[in-house]
Length: 396
Ligand SMILES: C[S@@+](CC[C@H](N)C(=O)[O-])C[C@H]1O[C@@H](n2cnc3c(N)ncnc32)[C@H](O)[C@@H]1O
Image (cartoon, rainbow, N blue to C red; front, side):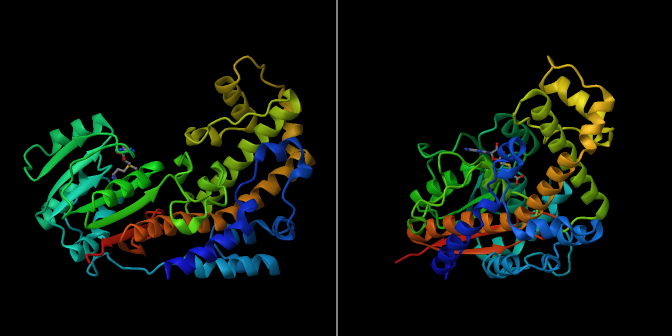
């Protein structure tokens, strides 16, 4: 099942790739280099409300275009995985540490862990040990937290010092690491970012760990081609940073005010890049993702002056009148409309990229002798990286 799904995902991904891997700077430099698709043009003609319904409420069918419909139809059959409603039916929350989202995730995994009946757990990237604490409390298993971040280990050790069933191992898990692990155990990675997912799967399968549960996250941090793991991948297609980042988007619906805010961020960021190129000939990516929310509540001119000070302190802030006339100009509005349409569609195709990466990982484990499955475990509205690879070693 996984193999045939994988080859279909791969085929469709090759077709959808330009729609997730655009080089934005090329388009800013020359608008004619944008991706030309009829459905982008149709999207740009939608009313704001209709566009919100399409993008923010995920009503893909509002875009009436045969090419689009065909792609979405093919995709929707490939990105869905069995939904295992592991969250207790009575929704009684069992005692769990961590923030509300973490507590939800731990409760939602309960039945999954119950089904695996682990005797010993290795909690890969377990941080301060919230998952280990949960498993120790509700299943009475001993657990070793393995994490590269020493501060988290110190914090976890002090928080859980009375709990004799939990130990901490401070180490970086990579292809070369040699951990002494008991194979009759469960190796779990609850949100292993970037390369760490593959490194964990590799270590666990090498050590013939009986059960493996892995939730990925932060796919944009994957480097050194640590995707295309299975023999089925044939090492292509190439996924650039943009394509990998699209897999980490949130694919749920959003409230209108949150959605409008998302549009404003896009508008300000791309107008800034566009202005910077037009005025100064500079094309440079500025990592603004951790900018304060309040920055986007400012006027565009204040946004520009603060952003300039941060990334280009040697440049003089522009005069307000000329900046605002650029911001409102036809070429800038046209560019923003295009990017808005492009990213609305890429938010759909990101799900295909995520499915590709996960099925590839599941197949990799299959080829190492595991029976692998992928399940949707969390409600994507609460925890967008909601899919788990669950693998059990076939004992011959
Ligand atoms: C996204 S956090 C998840 C933390 C925790 N599992 C949770 O669900 O709250 C990823 C964790 O993996 C750890 N990590 C990342 N790469 C690692 C590696 N190569 N080896 C060991 N730990 C790593 C980080 O320090 C971090 O604590």
